[in-house]
Image (cartoon, rainbow, N blue to C red):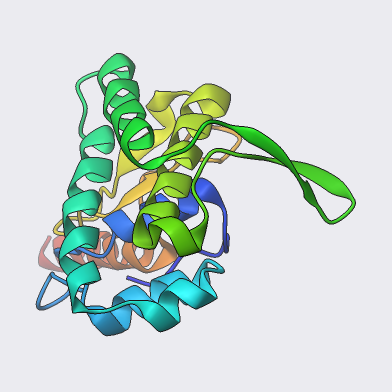
Length: 186
């Protein structure tokens, strides 16, 4: 599964971590030390990427499961409860900081203090912001079986069904081949 296009976006950080388990890949477990470092680097956690070790891989797998539970929750209240639990455990009280010429509301710990937890806290907070701004109904799992990757639907018409263009194309091609076979046998 390729990493998202939104580098450093809170929800994208979480989505990419959850998608490190992909039924379509063989083996489906993508999260190893190399992948973890690439994910951290991609989302701007350069120091964390350099410092990541094997012990962080198991921690990332455990946190991935907690974030994935928000996508599989029965309702928005359950998803928010799960994510609030992650933020309460890993996050820090919100504070306003300078970010270039603007401001940034920060609710995750410093990388040096928390390590991997800082990245995951930022991702969990990003998912909470997505629920607030877009609604939990925009959280989805890929309809391109056997893929089980997650996504946050940011489309205008709320029509996203696939995690990426590759899955969408794969399903469209399979449907085309089925139609072609049906018309040729008739």
